Image (tube, rainbow, N blue to C red; front, side):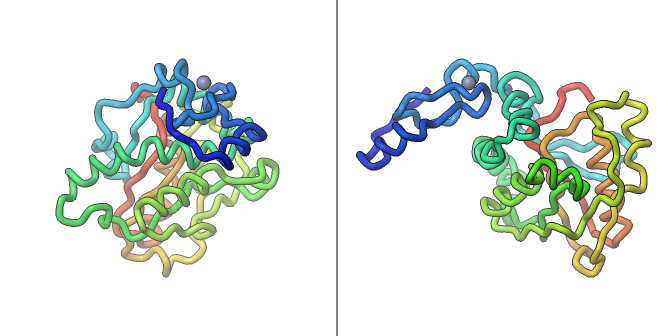
Amino acid sequence: MGYREIRKAEYFLRLLFPARCICCDMVLPINASEEVCSECGKSLKTLNKFGYVNLPGSIITKVYSVFEYEGGIRKAIHRLKFGESPRNAFVLVDLSYPILKSFLDRQFPCMPCSNYDIIIPAPLHPKRKRRRGYNQSELIASRLAYHMKIPMLKGVLVKKINTPPQSQLRRGERLKNLIGVFHVKKPNLIKDRRILLVDDIMTTGSTLEQCAKALMDAGAKQVDAYVIAMRRRL
Ligand SMILES: [Zn+2]
């Protein structure tokens, strides 16, 4: 873990509101420069490939992800989704963005980050969003939009039906659960656009696939995706 010099005002602020590890919630040393404790830091696994061509037949050309969905990242995402830690969304993007950027810069050397026109978060059904208080994918997308300097559009791709959580379903049921539930409200904002779709994790890829299908049906030119973490074996 790194340490840094802190000013007096920040020192007292940190005494009152100590920084906590985004993975395990442990209070961090007062001058810690990172948001992850040294123990959890050891369990953050980055994927070997950050961009890759998706499974054959998929609408999405590439899914970008930096972390494997396990260890500290899994805990941090769990706390983001179920532990009322919305701030984790920003920290997770800040952790992964430098790695993503270096990949995008290599892939598009002449037009860094400008290969996409808009960023769109995977939607939650309004009922689920009200209960949680926020849509974690929207928070991730807004932070990514800030870093990439690309506008984020929310409320355009919507979830019409409140389906059971994907995590409670078996693999075969996950795709069926989502067919036809996503809808584009204003297709004129999507038409001919190159879209970066954003979600927190990718497990079977059903959510991303069905969101991408709705966007392509509405006239999008291209849909790629970015997630904080994915399972290594799909
Ligand atoms: Zn920790």
